[in-house]
Length: 110
Image (cartoon, rainbow, N blue to C red; front, side, top):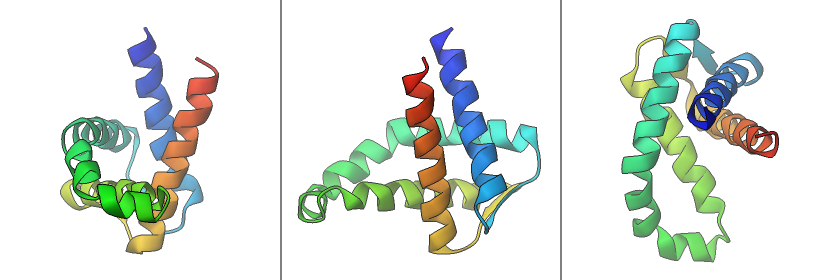
């Protein structure tokens, strides 16, 4: 049940980022579900590798590089999936930030 809740919160985060962030567009609920599945997959497979590779930069920037890794992953998923687009680095950073804040709020209420 918690997995379904987390998934629903993630879909909501993707939809909210498309609604509030200029430069992030999504074609519908089906695309939001596909984006969420891809984000989960990439976050569990590629993100740990990127985090380890950028660990010295992570220490020097006091964690700011995590935001850039999330933005890169967000932009990469938009590059791979039709029906989801992110224009520019600012859109990727703000979009991933909205998704992250939605996850945090969802975790508080779970």
